[in-house]
Length: 159
Image (tube, rainbow, N blue to C red; front, side):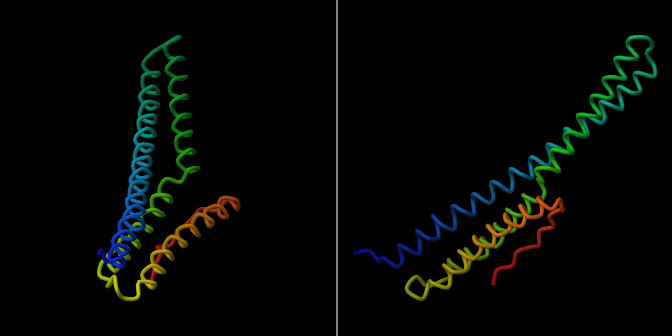
């Protein structure tokens, strides 16, 4: 016969903690990559605007006007990329998922060390508290967005 407490311990550790930890890690990486991509696109557009501006100084006539328009379009698109990045808040979201991942990784270590036959309620409460705090951070982001404030996310500490 199988040991139900050990099975529960293993399943909770894998399905609740492990799966959610992998999710947080993937979202963190996704937002980090998006932030890096936004920076690369912005810088590329600004370099394009600068090069078009320099080329416009060398050219004359219709070519000069075309380079000027190209420079203005590249600069405007760079502004759009910056505004989009600020609107989405890639670094804030990456930090939110990073904090949740770190807290969950710490709780996972404690969960693995916990005796399956002992009192696991404290370990479960700790893990579920991490999820509640992560959900609370989303509420803070909404309130700050409504107020037009920058969201400075504190590092979440879980006892």
